[in-house]
Length: 505
Image (cartoon, rainbow, N blue to C red; front, side):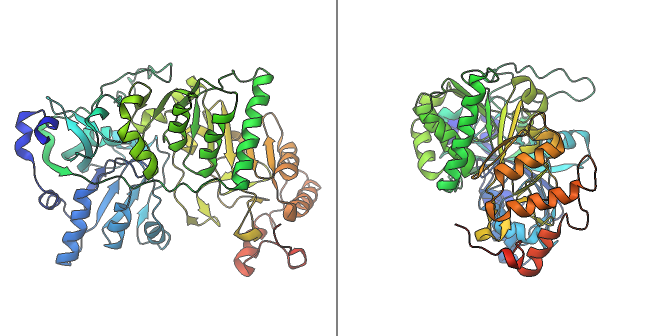
């Protein structure tokens, strides 16, 4: 089986164990690994590295670059104090704690930017790339597994490459990928994607066989996604968005099959896509960075005709279903590098409808999607910014309150701005939906407070807005009070003033 998957005869002699491969890793190295939102990530070699330092007690720290979050490997590495610097995205609880304590340097980046920064030399040299693969072609090309992410640029820029050959991935995955690397600036040609299903590259990552120093057989499975099932509030938000889509279709502002859809990871986005199965809208196309369970449910329901992504991020149930039935989807999906799946040029040309999650929004439409209380990193901006500024329609969703009502997710002013008011078209909570297109800041404030805020906080928000407006300004604020709600929560554990404490109904 391994010989069938390593079709370059000369590379068959480079097979080694994960323990042998990890010996290439030295203190201070910069290492790029495959993996995007817990799928297709390098697993065996890095976990063998953790076992090495556990046995030896040596101090070793690496700079770890990836496409997005890894599976359990992020947590294993950080618990062994192996990560010095991490970029461009993470979602591990242990790693998050170390980042917020200042023990790990974390660089939060737009996911389409990492490849460009590497290409320009701004991130320095890359010592090693570790890439999970389905197979290796006759000329050394690396066929990825369940994600592409930043693997192509890592292979191109790294001095050496280790391939983890995962035999748990069906050989039928060959042909799903479309690997395209833009030319260097300033002589770059336009990216020739004019349709979601266009293929413009090769089905493998080009790699000189001389770069590959080891091939590690692996049977490690991806860490399953843990999407929380939709609750009543999440379902209500999904219904608001679906009603809005039909409203836009009736007015001729969207075609009957919408525009290509992008959705970030999360229960709300998954619920919106799932809701399309029972709607009259069909012939859907997906152009996104992450394909979740709902996309394959829509394939099976005959609602989606084609989907382009950078990764498959699936539950255990859906992973088993897709692996068993990959032949049914082969002609309907394509996996691309994240600098292409998230590229502003392509997003704007195709007219994407982007749906992503916010931690909090303010009364003028600014969105915080990364920092709790303005200082504590949650996961990162991911690809939401790539899509938000360039999409034909940008939607952000959040529940109106958190922590049993002690936190309002609609506030006078967000504590950290990831997406400015200029990039946000529609906001949604379980209370309602606010279409902000074409509105001035004062008009947006009224729509957001009226339609999105929880009743416990609505009057207080309107009072703030009225008093701020009395002082004038294009975007009225009372600077002494703009962040007072967050300050109150830090001091008392509740954003509400004592006289307004009422349980959430």
